Amino acid sequence: AGKESREEYLSKTLPDYGVISFANKTLPSDAKVELIFAGDRGYYWERPYYYGGRAGDSLIAAVKSAKSGQELKDSFSGRGITHIFVRDALLIKFAGDNFDADKMKVLSDFTGNNLVFLNSANGFSLYGIR
Image (cartoon, rainbow, N blue to C red; front, side, top):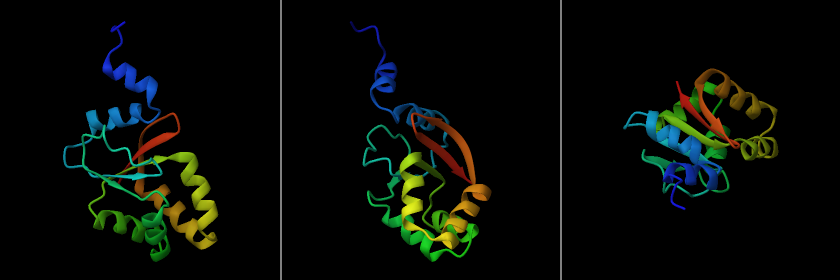
C-alpha cells in the first residue's frame, strides 16, 4: 500500500483527470477553460475555468446567436475563453438534439477552423481556440 502516486491514483479513478493534468502542466497561467458537459468538477483544475452549464445553456445561446464559426469564436473570446474542455459523446448528442442544419454548419465551421486539438483521454478532450 502507498506505492501508487497521487497522480496515478487520480488518473485511474477519474476519467477526466488525465486531460486535466495535461492542461495543468501545459496551458499558460492566463488560460481560461470552458468546461462543456464535463460536470461541475473544477476541483483539480489549476487554471481559471468557467462552467458551460449542465444543460448546455451557454452553448445553445452562443451557437444560436452566431451566424458563422468566426462569430461563435468571437463569443468565446469575448468572454475570455481560450480553451474548451469537453465530454465528446455528450456534445455530439447534444448538438444533434438541439441544432438545425444551419446551426450545425456554424458549429462545424467553428470546430474545423477555430479549434486546435491538444489532448484526449477516456472520452474527454481539450482544445485551444485560435
